[in-house]
Length: 248
Image (cartoon, rainbow, N blue to C red; front, side):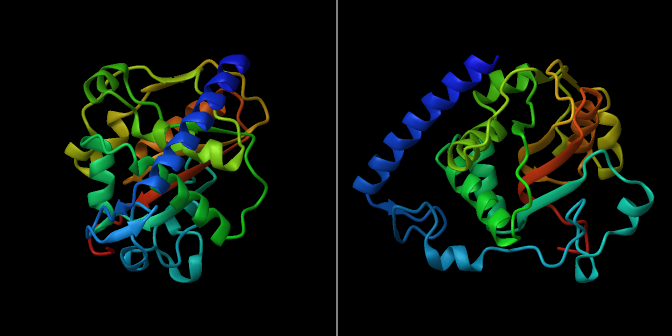
């Protein structure tokens, strides 16, 4: 497993280097406004207007006064210890996420990864995790889509941060109805017992990479699975956080 992860990481680094060279050689157009953006996927003007989160609960990333722990995380702590999200899942970030997730715009995985790393640096990154894990996609869903957008993002985060990416050992055990199609109140039940982990994670701090966090049900279930495998601490590194109705 260690060798396969190393070889996969080396391949990703070579591929990423080739893409960087190609992007510098071919001027880009902004994904949002189509203006010239140099080597960036989103131009500086659009990037400055993207919806960032204000003060938020350090555990679930929902808005709170002065960034205090929210009441729900205080009374019903989730399995994960922290959540870091770069943006609010609102226009036009939602368009970028949908283009990556549903329309095969895999180049946006790099933009997502850089957003995560920039947010981590902006907050004064604490001790790094021992490894990264992408939120798994069911085999059925991956066959339909052709890729797991969380893994595509995680590959770039790993390459840019020099953190190891665990690619084997954690999986989704069954296909569930898409969370986006369900009411918030039913999402936890939908993903119950949906993950498994065979990797030995005893005493490790794990950062889980995903594109969008809505209720946090999938991430909470996956964090519980990782902790049963021995993980000491689980953090969520997310591109965008969906806010409840009335808070967006």
